[in-house]
Image (cartoon, rainbow, N blue to C red; front, side, top):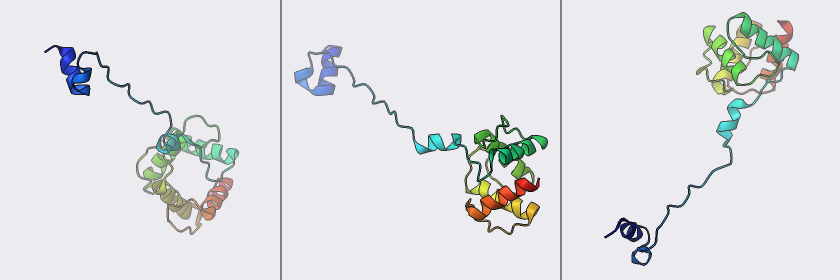
Length: 140
């Protein structure tokens, strides 16, 4: 039995045994998943660009690299923020640049500690958390 015959039998039975058979091409997936897009998103948590630049400068001042100081809090800025918040003991979790509940809880703890805002530490960036962050950055 030839290799072509063996492949033909395996792929399509005896009727296709005499013809060469190619495996189908893999289907290409073009849609980006939400997980692939989210970490690259900019989220200033209610800060103006000027206030976000001040936050980025604060990160630089304490040795955490937020990337370009452009007033856009993206992955690198949040990675620096997580490092800063972890360094201070506010438990931001993984320093992955993803603004998730652990990072928000750490920011809420930071704002409560440094500004006396009395926020509920729930990991939700609601209106009170955003207002406290804005107010804190005006006070810096």
